[in-house]
Length: 430
Image (cartoon, rainbow, N blue to C red; front, top):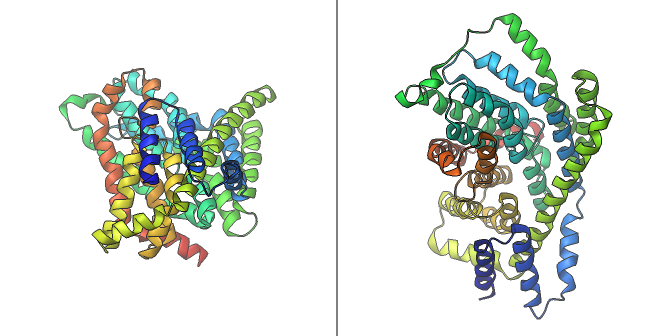
C-alpha cells in the first residue's frame, strides 16, 4: 500500500508542475516520515551516504573538463572537420551534426551539454541552407544521446558508483553501441534526402582533398587523443576513473590555452561557476533520487517486482523488455538521471536473478533513459535543440519519430546481440 501511495504522490507532484528535484525529495521524505520504524534523520543520513562515494568525485571533474573543451573551441573544430569528411554526401549537414556529436561525446559525457554545444553551431547553419528547423532540432536532439554512451559518461559513472560495476568496463561497453547509433542516424538522414519534401538535403559540396582532410585532423587530434588518454590510463592502471577526471581537466586546460589558444584567464571564473551550478544540480538529483531508491528497496519493492515478473514470465528477454519499458515510460515524464538512480537497485537485483551480464544491462539501462529523454511529452533534449532552432516544440515533434525509432532499433539490437556491449569490456579487462 505504501508503495502505491508513494508512486501516486510522485506522479501527482509531477503533474502539478513541481520541480523534479523537489518532487522526488518530498516523496522520499514523506515515505521516511510515514514509516514508524524509521527515524526521520535517516533521510539526511541516506542522502549523504549516497554521495559519499570516491567514484562520484569523478563527476565534477568531467563536467568541468567538458565545459573547458566546449568553451575552448573544440565543438567548432569538430563541426568543421565533420563537414570536410561528409560535405559531399547527401544530407551533409545532418551527417556533420551526427559525427560532431560522436566526437563531442569523447569529452562531454552529457547529452544535454552535447545538444546545446553542437546544436548552437550546426542548427543555425542548417537553417541557413534551407533545412527545416524542426528537422534540424529533432536530429541533433536524438544524436546528442550518444554523449552518455561513448566514454567518458556521467551517467555511467553514477551507475558504476551505485552498483560497484567497473566504470572503465562500462566506458568500454558504450563504444560499439555509440558508433552503431551514429551510423543508423546517418543512414536515416541519407534516406530523407530522397524524399521530395527534403530537397535541401541534396545540397552537397565538392569532395575534400587529402590536404583538407590532413588539416582537419590537425585541428581535432586533441578530441581523438582525449579518450585514448582517459581510457588508456584507467585500463593500464595508471589512474582510477576519479583521477582520470582530474587528468581530463588538466588536458582540457592545456588544449584551451596552448593548442587552440581560445581560452583566457578571464574566462575561467564563468566556466567554473557554470560547472559548479551543473554539478550542484546533478548532485541534488543523485541524493534525492538515491534516498527514494533506497526507500523502495527497504519497502521490499525489489521482491515485489521480482515476484510479479516471475509470475508473468521466466524468459530473460521478456524480463529485459519489462524493465527497459518501465524505465523508458518513466523517462518520458521525469528527469532521466533521476529515473536511473531510483530504478537501479531493483533493475540490477532482478537482472542478476536472470543471469544478465552487468555491462550489458548497464548499457541497456543508460540507453533506455536517453531514449526517454528524447520522447514527448517532456523530451528534455528536444526542448534544448528546439530553443536553439527557434521553432515550436510541436514542429520538432513532427520530425522526431524516425530518429527515435533508430534509437529503439539500436536498443533492441544491443539486447539481442549482447556482444556489442560486452565484448570490449571482457576482452580488455579479462
